[in-house]
Image (cartoon, rainbow, N blue to C red):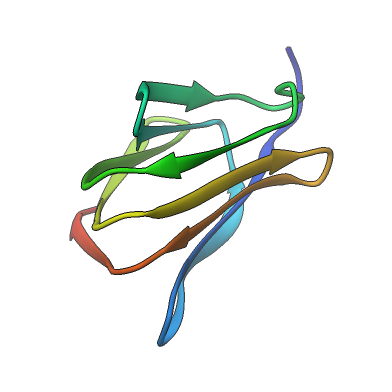
Length: 88
């Protein structure tokens, strides 16, 4: 596996995060899931919980309250009802 995952986390009032990362873990309504570069496309609803972004040795955590995740050839986009960074 090579390359980076394009990730965007968007809340109604603003884009909370955008960048190229190694992995994103998120709280799906059917269970937690992780997305790596070149992941198969899918879409799912999110439940309240933590979205964790991994890039190199760095980790950032965002608390989301519902929304949707869309994985496609361009990367991962999360449209959250609410999103707040809790740790960098």
